Length: 414
Image 1 (cartoon, rainbow, N blue to C red):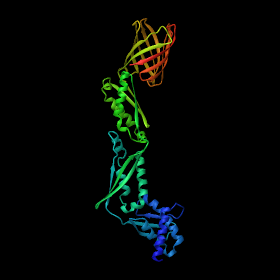
Image 2: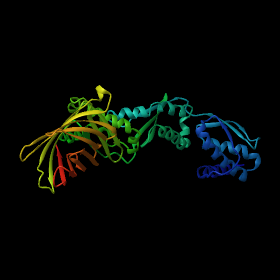
Image 3: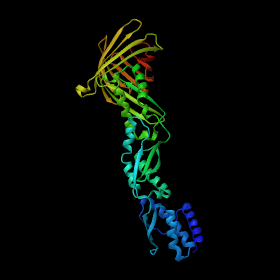
Image 4: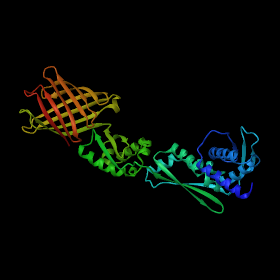
């Protein structure tokens, strides 16, 4: 075969290499290059060999294949080529490229504490794993195996973290080759936070203040990918807890803090600050639809005994004063939590020394709530309410001790 004809043939077969769509053919056995690169190289060699068998005389096929392969797979040359076994032909490669050692470097994205620590923990060991991929690869080979290499690195990264893309930069010096991996976040991002604070011991006016401060405290998570935030829901919840626990208003009441983070573009953080020792509330109540009832100021204070009795028992005092005649009423009682937000108990009301049995259902969220009282002589007293805001609720109120039994009651909590 003359040189001109050979060049044309090689050029044609090289074009086939780049346009190749896999098809069934004999399977070449390759040695001397990484397995992750050899798999794609085999498919290309099969396509080349198929064209050679169709267009090149048999006595020139092996030499042509060797020339084409060495042009296509830069950085390697063939040391052995065995086509005698047509069912399992073998090719042994040796590296002819730059023999200097590889180094890997991870460029971390600009993240604030503690988010940066989560990222570092996620990608721990990835530099070593990437080094193992490229350790024996000559730099010249990246011109044809870059897609396969990127696919392998993507698999490694996807196993460790979601929501991040990466880029590769290779820097070469006389003594070494350096592969740098950089990361960029993928949309959608967390754009804003909407914290909600509830507490059985802090006045409602503190809730909004703590929520506003929590937005500032949690600012390091703004801009991170939503999918990555889902991977770190527990970490973000613990971050919110630690920020609230550092506030004096929380430490002064020896409260336990819980938080639930919901990763979205507008993310919710529901937090609860519950004193392990006591609970407290101050409310203003007003009635509509009845003539006998006047505005009332209510004060509830209680002691949680679980730390001392190992039982979910609360002892409480519930007092109110009418704001027209300033009559004072109080109740002393105890209650047990039998289920999440469901309590049963009994109380003595003064004046009158009457015994009332009582049931509560309230999880302190913006959901309906219910309470019910019953006395053998005085009848029923209950309310079904809904919180319109953290400090405002509306109730359908029933009381057997008044002629106008049904009313609408508004509750403003300080």
